[in-house]
Length: 163
Image (cartoon, rainbow, N blue to C red):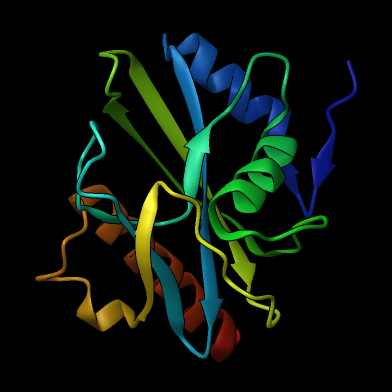
């Protein structure tokens, strides 16, 4: 079997790992970044799942959809981006959680550099802001999202030092 990779990411392997671990729902997310800050969206207070929480752009993978296609669709739906996402630095982190429907979910999050595309929010979110990783504590974000941002920041700091 041939494994398809993009920028060294084994997308099929990520899906296989989730299947092997009994994950029932896959989710993709993005650390959209510019100038050392990341894009954070605030969920509507009317949302039934985590109302008012701040989060990275993310959403569920639909049946038959690969992770990169799902990421592109979610970026279009949530922030109005079109075109193929350019991964930078690529795969950042994964975390498991229980979805609003009670299923075991796994989110795979990828880094994407912001390229001056306008941010156009869906009805699911009320506002957005750019957050510095040092400011994640005390924010209205989950521990998993905070750790993902820290992981991204650590990787980027190492890359900038040449590690």
